[in-house]
Amino acid sequence: MKEMTAVNTEKSPVPDALPRLVADHTTRLNSKVNSLSPSPLRKQSRSTFWLPIGFGLLFLVIWQLKGFHKLFHLELYQLPIPSAIGKAIQTNGDLLWNYSLYTGAEMIGGCLIGSAIGLLAAIAASLIPQAAKGAITLMAGLNAIPIVALAPVMNNWFGDGVASKIAIVAIMTMATMAVGAYKGLRSVEPAYLELMHAYAAGRLVIFFKLRFKLALPAIFTALKINMATGLIGAIVGEFFISSRGLGFLLSDQIKLGNMPIAWSCIVIAAVLGIALYYLIQLIERIAIPWHVARRKLQ
Image (cartoon, rainbow, N blue to C red; front, side):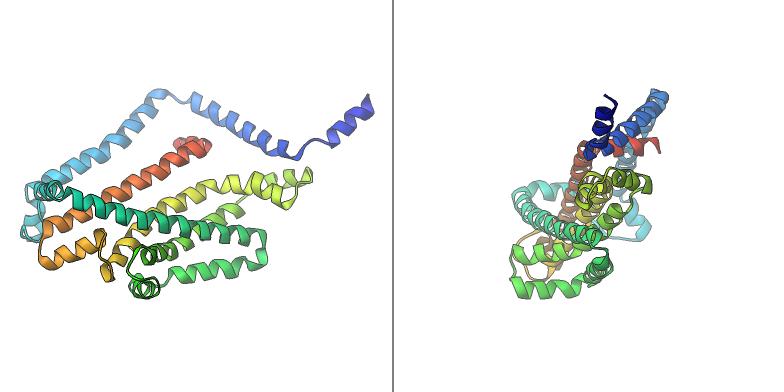
């Protein structure tokens, strides 16, 4: 019986190591959460929710009462008031909706492609340390290209359709994902690695069971940054050669002096960026709830 027990211990499956670590970490985390009084957490969540809304309403009231016009000596044709912008959105709702979908498709498509390329580069760099420095440096070099120089080149290569704007957004977003994901993949506590090596885990097992899971917070952070960067890239790309999109409409209406519609494009672009940011945050909460719980304790 003693010999059988020894044999079974030696053949303990490798994947059991990480679940034990996660279970211990989750137990300690839950005990800390339960030890906290619920009322301070509720107060903190309410303040986090209501303070931005209150500040935003105050900002709109000051804007509507022409406070910024008096402060910066602006005229109504330079800075329309919110009611005029709202009326322009209501009047041109169908046009703005169609152009928003067009720009959103460019941004989301470019973000997904650029983030996927950056993630693959980070994975390759983490698995092949000899190529890490060169790959990450190359990605950072592409990200350093000014968009005003990149947009005409992409329009010349792919035409004035969706493909050129997707290419612009992809190039602008791949470096952020590559750098963020690489740091997440390499930021593993030595104790975890020693335990996995003690269980004779291979490189691929360590990568998928340990490194990739612990890198998910960094990957989602890069995705949230890429949403804002991608929106800028799509709109600026439409400034040069395009016949549709919020960037095209914004540039065209500024030339015509129709500032309410121009500011409508700005408002819709901001709402689109915020909505996609919170969508990524929601996916993050579902995918890695342990990270959200730890962030609440900070």
